[in-house]
Length: 337
Image (cartoon, rainbow, N blue to C red; front, side, top):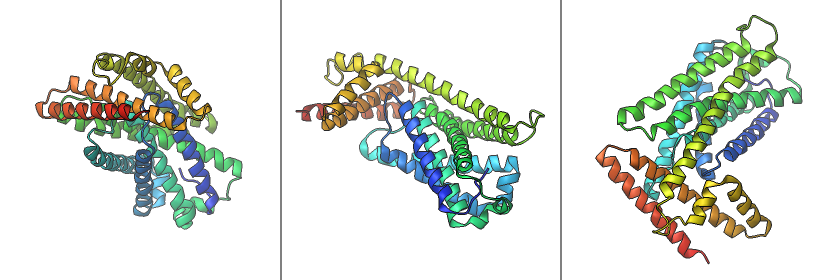
């Protein structure tokens, strides 16, 4: 569904809504924050993908053909996410280890691509070419409150469909064979298309046989939302388990001490420590501690991937990544005052 309105107000609302959702997604990623520049890159790919789609496919098809809309939008979102991952992988090769650490990372990047897609649609619809909006553009512009509400719902939907795809991208990183690593993202695309179709059909069709559209809309959104929340809970628990197991033997090498491992394993203790640094004005210590913790979690995730990998060539690659992450951690510790 598109927003009505032919001015920049709708775009700014879409941008603000996207920022709020990105903050929420970032807060949900408790163990290892993705770099803001990486989030911005994936967001940009989603934004550009939406612009290309809206000029390549007529608005009537996207608004009124539910299956076509679901397929077109999710395929473009998939390609945007894939392109973003390729860009991040190119940087990772120069840095020395992968940016995609698992399902939680995939959810973050997938939701980011989806939100970029939503803002890109608003940019074309409301600013670049309002006439491209099609027959619905003739409808009287909604009130500001209605605009905010509909934009928030659309942003949530786009973010959820992207997160579904991203979860499968992230899970693919831990598959044993190349064919599995290819199949998982494709399955994620199919699931996202089905979720998109179900959402459109339930929210705006007559799937419940009643006239209460708001109930249908909330049911349509809560189903994929519950799915993503369950995946986030599972992913965070899985990461905690990996951190405890994979970093337990790192104390002898100095990369992760026992105290650091306790802080990494306890979200409340880690947040309290960071808050104390900020409140006392130790911003540089805060930045350094956050970076160090992220590298330590990266070490745990990479070691977990190494432990599950069967291909000799990829094992050699992951062993090299583990070594580079350890060196980065030790250098950071050596530079601390």
